[in-house]
Length: 446
Image (cartoon, rainbow, N blue to C red; front, side, top):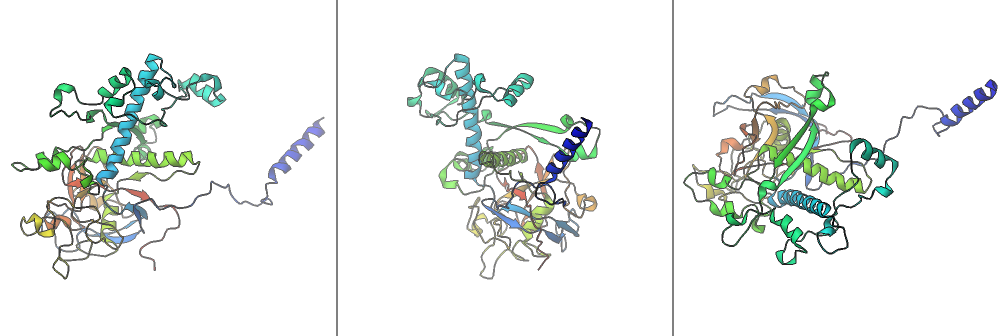
């Protein structure tokens, strides 16, 4: 009997090895992967460059001493995130909240699909009679109900088409109170547009191995609607109400950069964009993409230079005009003649010539949030490979590139500025990046 068991075990061992590799170590195969350039982005090949001021710091700030650093390859948005792109974020979050409220109301009232009322928006997939063993386990051990929102039916926004009173009650709660409306208009209560997400603080986890996984999971709730009042608050004794009223929502400004977005809101947008992209890929059963994120300070400056070493501006320099006397960016020239560069406020995100990495408006138009904290001495102690200093306790976050209201000094690719993470300004926007995976081709390699 023992001999039979031994022969069986040997046979099983031999059959398990006959996987076509002829006994050679060929490695475990992963899923097929093909690099894909994200829509609207350009590849910035990694390399080394001289970061910081290449000439005298005329403002005397002395916070950007020259040093040679190296960054890895990444994708970057060719333009700043536009109003239409950010509105997609706002609308998706709004619709998700509405669908959840409708489903909860239908659940409370016992409404189900097929009744031509709020029941059409009831949760789907909540039938416990047809669960897989895994779904049963998750339900019994974690209380994870197997139900999801019904996204196959369109939300009804026209009040005359509301299917029933319960639907009207839910929708009424999404608008500002009736007594706060004026001119017969009720607008969305944007305080309800809250995006919730969680992430792992990898740096914190790496530095303190005694922490458990739950200690480094960070959960955020962010109100995502842009602060349109920034157009009023940023400029005392100035008439900017048309920009406050129209800039974000009107189609005339679709391709203009979004402003009035705080650093925290920009971070939330990155999280949503990653989830939105990966939800689609999950439905197609293909691998996930890397996370979208804000660039760090070194990545932003490297990309802004467009491969030009020691240049003052993205187009070279040292002048803000080309050989025909035309301004190369949207800023505040000639001691306050805002209109001299053909623009008063912002311009469309793809205006002016791109740099050699095909990136538009890396100088001027709107300053841009980056994923770095401002420390005047950070260049002295930051690493020389992928340098980044982002202290969670430091609320001063770096903004780069200057804006339509700034003088030329802030347009220089080496100039640093900052704003507080919870602040929203009419002259600060952002663009996102995504880590590049694949064969590393650097800008220094011919």
